[in-house]
Image (cartoon, rainbow, N blue to C red; front, side, top):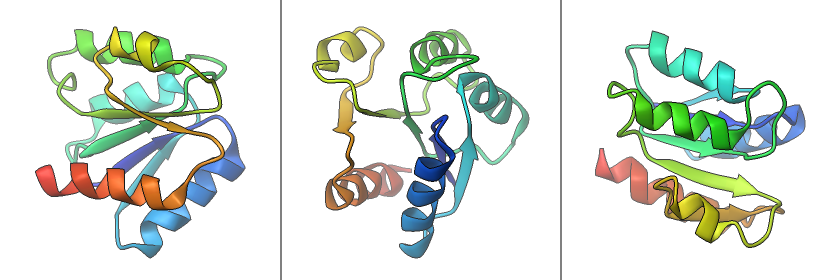
Length: 121
């Protein structure tokens, strides 16, 4: 099961993908929430986790999450927010997201969080 990295910054997507792949995780990526929804709805190999940026063009992470939870086929896929925005924990909790990693990313924290979700599946 892959980990889906959703971020509009290609350098961040690539860096996260490389770090995760170096640790042996399969990775898929999307540049915005719309691409992420398309991926989730059209791939049989569902990810075990979505790493989600919030501020993106086309479809934000906020809108992605609202649409994700409305779709029973993909609603249960856990999401971890990775954002430069501070004090979003209360806001993301309203969307059913409990995990938040701040940018710049602490890679040890990232890998620990990913390991938690990867072993749950």
